[in-house]
Length: 476
Image (cartoon, rainbow, N blue to C red; front, side):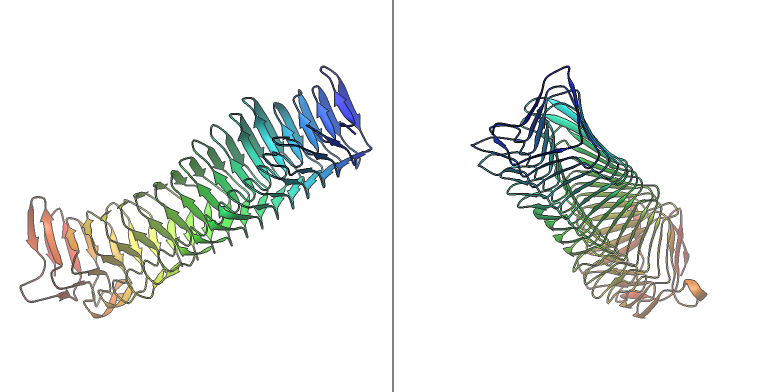
């Protein structure tokens, strides 16, 4: 039959029954133009929409609000014909609230939004999730397995105060949540877990000009081709709290960013895995003033791999592992004015930092207790300028503190690279405890443009502590 419930404005409808087995062109079970409340184990299930570009397999709402509470559920609905959006719930406009163990689950769409779509067809909508509400086990043949925010020139806001988004699947981007252009997602608490995005963003995918703010909660156990936890495509992601952990992908195990990513506060990115960028893979900008990136693993860039600009003024990068660049692998500009890079391991170059671009270290920044084949603290294949900070307690075969490859340059104006006999601060190496410079590499001290060679002609390493203050070499 053509939809069982059609709610006109300004009417209000409350149900504690079931709506099931219906078929329509739009809104297979319910069309809401007023106010709709589901409660007391009520359900909308096994409904469908048919035909090209037909949307809202279970519920479509144009109304003031739609509330699900008290174990209400929307499940088993379909919008699977070509172009169909929102297998479960489509909020074209108005407010949608889920709370009190309500669920949207096991719905399917042929285009975007297996479970929920917010803001559609030039309109705007709002979605708020509370308590133990759940969006789970939904699937889409395109993007946004669990929740889509904004679609067909519409925009939306999604605020997550609790609940879970889990076990959803997307054939393209956004296994759990897809944030489209002009839309915003704010996560205060709750979990996004065990979702799959075949292309990008197993947990969350942020599209062009989309905005994702994470202040708490957990994104874990998600998988994707890129950005296992979060993928940012020319959008922005601000993380001041919460945890991104246990996610997997080919590129960017925790986070893949081709936009703007800011990490601060007590945010944590840990125990993620990838081929490149175990914690973070960035082709955009990273600003780190706090938080921790730890115990991630990759072939390159165990903690972070950056191709553009990475600015670090605080926080910690520790316990990460890679074949190259245990803590950070940088091909662009890396500016470190504070924070700590410690306890990372690289099997080849750069236990703490491997840089092939421009790396500037200053302030109270510290690179310590890292391990590598070459460059326990830093391996430079580009230009490494040290304007302050300390490099100590690192270990490698060559260049315990700093290794300069044949194509690299090291310049020091202020700061200390510890050598042997410095007690617990000593770097350790078979050759070049403080510094090793490869053939055609170079090392200088002083201030621009007056640079003086650190090494005598024919000498390629320094075992003693290197200490420079305002361009003046104090030791060795």
